Every structure is written in structure tokens, then in C-alpha cells.
Length: 436
Image (cartoon, rainbow, N blue to C red; front, side):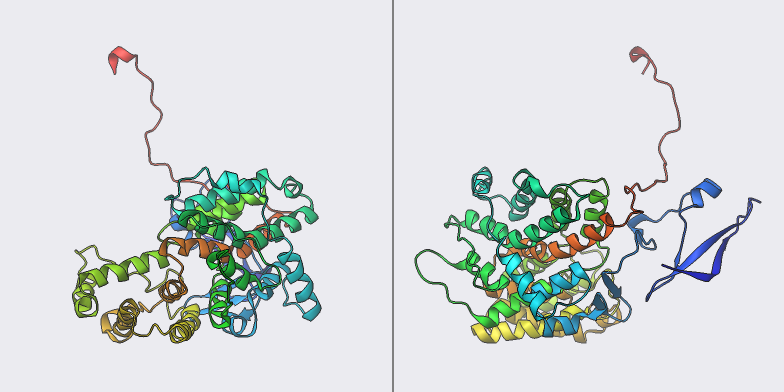
């Protein structure tokens, strides 16, 4: 952080002495007012539910400008990374700060791909779940259980152990997600095949069976790889903040990442693309395209309780930059699979057209976000709706690890301990039972 010559002065109307607070400048983005000594100097906390105006850390990993609709990993625009790099290159970038050269990419890819298998005992742990359990419930358990199987990577004070745990999480998450899916549908687990790319290997583990050879479709692999890149990190969102907060206690990386998976499960976060597809299916059940204007009317009615899922974003006040890329991928996949006439996809495209032209949505900047298109793409790939958030968790794992590593390697990091504004009862005495 770079200190600014400008200071912030906090004045009080009750006659308390003024307090001068330092201001720091980032490389880009808003300046921050340093309030770390505020309580010590004034006996007062700040109040910011949802952390809308609070920087919880300093970071070099991901930058978002919501007003301009920009997303950068380590300074590289997401538009360039999604077109010119594959997912493992993006992983290397997030972890190490720079894009790999050819030799570094080859070494990193080989390292990751040779850690894709999971301990066979995890199959028996998995079989303790009901087959109709939500995949995210199962995945949360599996990720947390990794700490019981990989003891040699739990010392967070050892950089080498942190590194091996990071590689294991990136490498084994596709295997675990595929196992969750296969278990749910009653098919045999498919072991990794390390001569395939990271994403092709995942698709094979998801969709291959022992009955026949699996054929890799490069268009579909590239589409899923792009989904992974676009979801790899997104600054200090709810799940990333959860990983940092859990990790700040000194817990092992598997437990911290499991906490992130659990947070991601929420419908306002990682479950948004699942909610979007559910919304489309509900409109289809109403009558499809012919009934879409009735649905839109309900969305505009504040008293209806009907929400438009997959549109607008908490951070982006303009078009979600990831949505532009995902929209292109969406059409590529639909064309490759010949699904242009699918009723649900027609419905989605009709809804997109209305949202981009209707003044109600345009004036509120409720543009389609990445969840809208990624849900459509995943459905086209054959991924069930309830697996969408697992795919998100798979992609976001590298971002969680990079953020966790950045925090743990900072010698000044402290355990997270938010404060509160207490509005409950003041002190009172306990009365005897007969007098209550």
C-alpha cells in the first residue's frame, strides 16, 4: 500500500477531539481510509453490514471495476485471458503472479495432472451419503475430508506443504466433482486419464462409461474451459472472504476451502446459475415463449415476489465482462450440438432480447450476467442443474487457494474478528424460578 499525502479528519459534534486517519492508495481503484486505530483512539467502531464500503485486506490478485465492467487477473483483462489462455495457465497466473512460459506451463501441467487421483478410501466415505443428496452437500463433505487423507500437507507454516496442498486441491477437485455426479446417477467411477487436458479429463470422468470409448469434442472442452477461466476468481466475494476468514484461524487449507464450498452453495452466490435454469424451466412450464410477457409483467410488479434470475450483478453496474465472453461460447456450443431449436434455449434467447431492449431493464442496468449464459452452456453440455454449483466450486478453487496463500504468507495477517453494534438487553439480574 502507498500512503497518501492527504489525510482524513474525523470530527465529532459532541466535542470529542478530532481524529486524523491515514489514507492509502492502491495501484488502481478507490483510496482506502485506514481505520485500524479508530477504536483505540475513539472507543468507537465503524458500522458496515455487508461490508459495502470496507476493504478487508490488501491484495495483488484480482481487480474489478464494477462501473466500467472490468475484471482483471493479476492485471490481465479477462477478455484476453479467456481467448488466449487455457485454465491451467490462468491457475499458474493466479498462484504465481505471472503467466507461464512454455517450459513452466509444461511443468505445471504435468505436476497437476499427476495428482488427479484420489485416495481409494474416499470412495467408501462417499458411499455413506444418500444418492439423492444435493451434490454440494456431498462435495462440501469430500473437500473437508481431504484433511483426513493427506496429512503431509497440513502444516500451513511450511511453504512446501502449502504448495502441495494447493496442487492437490486444483488437481483432485475435478475427480471429486465427477465422483459426486457418478455416485448420484449410479454409474461406475471413471479414473483420471492424464494424457488428456485438465478440462477434457474432467469431461471424460463425468460422461464416459466402461461400455465404450469416450470421444473428446474440442469445441465443448473449450467451452467448459472458458467457464473455468471466467469463474476462477472474483476478488473479495462472499465465498472468498469465507475462505480468508476460516483460514485466518490457522485451520488447514482443506477445511478453509470446504468452508468456501459451503458458502458458494447459497442461491445468492454460486447457486445463481442453478436458480436461473430453474426459472427458465418454470416459464417453460407456464407455456414457454408465448407466456414470457406474463412472466416479465410479474417481475416488474413489486408485489408479486417474482425475481428475474441471471440478470444484474452486485458489483457490476454495467455489463458483466464475463457475460460477453460466455454469450459467444453459448452460441458456439448450441451450434455445435444443433440445439438452436431447443424450446428452453429459444426461451432463454427471447428473454435475453427482451432484457436488452426493454426500458425497464435497460434503465436499471439489469443486463444478462455470466450465470445466465453459463447455466445454458452447462445444460447443453449435459450437466444436470443441481451440479452447476459444483462446477463453479471446481473453477473457483484456484482463486480461493491463491487468496488463502496470499493471506497466510503475509507476516502481518491476523485472525479475522469483526465487531458488532449490540442492540440487545442491557445487564439484568436473574430472578429465582418462582418469580419469573
